[in-house]
Length: 416
Picture 1: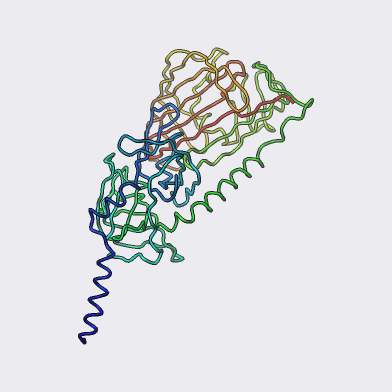
Picture 2: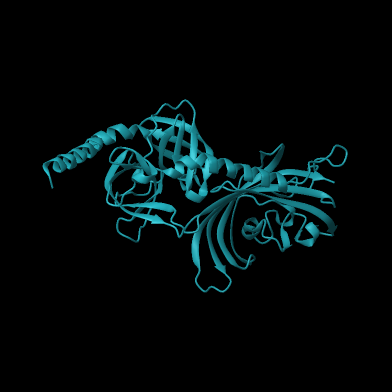
């Protein structure tokens, strides 16, 4: 190699080194742009914590699973906190964009899509195990693609832990290359990040998803009552043909909504028949027969005799051990129900007098054709209206390896 070539190579190497930051300088530059996310449910009884990266004025990105099953959240740094709201969800890639008012933290720079190289030095900043603004380093150890060659994850040796979800993975120049999302607990130092180019796609994908949800919700709703054709269901437990109830079920992880419409076809003594016989209840709202899975979780957890056995709503503290066979399997409950005094609850445009019943304990789920069964913690809350003699709101959070959360609410009711 000639001396000119040596000088040229040395100059290129010096230029590359000059653009890289020392770890302390990189941290000083980026730490103001990585925040902690603290999310809670409506009763502030359960909490989730993760990280978020500032990508624009008043905009941050985190993992959707950090916000899952929660109803409100804040972004926090030191003693400063701001309330946030979900702007665009992309659950397919586990990215959610959140909006924060009066928020001035600096945005990060995104690295070019073609800048990723296996073996390159990278740095992760987040809140692992609640330790705010933690810096770790490592290498890009793999670029994981699907069968079509699309980049799914950046694999890195930079250590992350629970609480790192939604944090930033940066190259040596301090540019964002990924959002740290998960680690393989059963493996040694295999950590994954969603590629940063997904952040640029997030507003478009999120807006499209929200529009699809709105269209699906509108399509499922029955026409609004026409003046003179129907009126609000009077606060009475006496059902009659033509009564209808619209419930909305919301999956808190994806925010997907579905509408469940019940219409009374006829009343046969104490049997109230809905929707062409696909659902039959007694006069207290206890399901007697159903071929639909629309309200399956509520039906499963309803104890023998229902929430108002003999027409009298549960009160005080009661324990239940029971099994039921619905939905293609057997479900067993060992739970305690704690009922509170009746109180007003507003749902949609109506207000109901309802008894809140908190259900806590354990459940076992045994689908058909399986011999293994796991017992997991169960938590749910039922709001039962003595006036309508039916459940007007139900929230579920089933903890354990099959953790999930959903909400069922009565949004409209009428009498045809």
